[in-house]
Length: 355
Image (cartoon, rainbow, N blue to C red):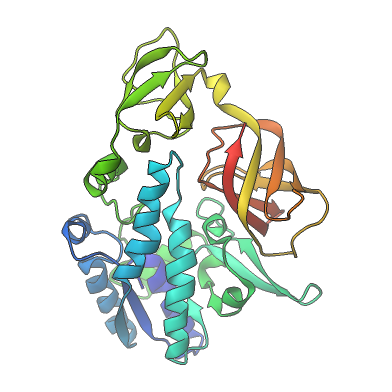
């Protein structure tokens, strides 16, 4: 229970169905200035969130626990986030949190309490397919809130122990149910996209968290000409237009980041588009690892609309090549690419290379 409307309604729905519900809030903020930021901005799982979750638990008459995952969160999510940016890649910390904290550490703790299921407020659906003998991860019916993309790392065992009761509802309906239930968080604002950067400025966070990685270098055009100086590659991402600090006759975008040369390359909007990528660190949800090419739809960012593509397994089986039928804007190393068949998550991986 994060203190928000979604997890609160999820708890209420399960109690209405007759489950014996225990509320748990993860304490994930390190014991430093980051914790102060979380509380000041109402960040996810800060003291304000714990307080809200306790109020909801009291309203629902269920026990509530606060579980400490601070060290693990810093190691698996925050450190990974910073390291990826320092390598010129763009990470997705929500995916890492779901993979290592919610559906690994928290699920293990829930099993230790002899809980039958871990229930979350995600907008996604889990179904069991008897023909395949597999649990399937599907999109939430509210396409604007669908969170299946950030859940693609889930294993069959994790899906078996997970319940996501909001997958069949719209966000509007969930808020309406919260009001009908008299929950004190019914009209609480949406949480930040990156919970440990409450003011939304990741560049300030990176500068404060890892100042040793801030190394200015050249901004180049495609021909290798120097156009200006960047502030450090960790402050840039593929497709970025604002904040380049250089003037040109046409808008320029980041088209490549070269850690070896500590260089940022810029180009026209047309040059940001690509139609091919290689993905590694794969996880297959709906199927066993494929041996032959597959026609799928692929999503390269959380807010990206998936596009038609052909997925081809590479010889060692540890990577796949994805060839889009139409060019996509800003295919970004470090981000996840998630494969879909209609509303079902086939699998996904981390973008390693793109062109």
